Length: 137
Image (cartoon, rainbow, N blue to C red; front, side):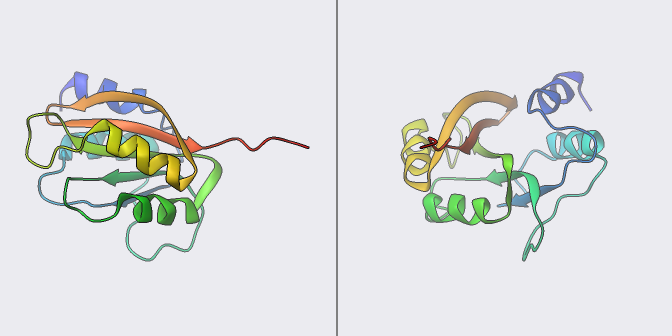
């Protein structure tokens, strides 16, 4: 495993003990990044029908995968109040690339705010989304 990928996995903010749900995993996903995250958190990813609160959601998303808003809302269902959703998409020029504006639009509709985008692997970028803060009255 390369140290660059390990460094990027660390920059995603995961810590030991984090529980992470993963969606959209297929053979084209970056396995090295996945293994670094598992190593950092010391937990395997949850997938499928989840019934517990998670610290983060990893969503591997490609153009044509369906409705991103629906997927983000589903991710919010079991995300902790301080959790984050990382939308991992193929980089520009790669098959399945998703325009950043599409992610931003879907995030806004789902009630999320985009905070950062990182190049996390040779073929993948990650966009961090968090729940919008509600104002107190």
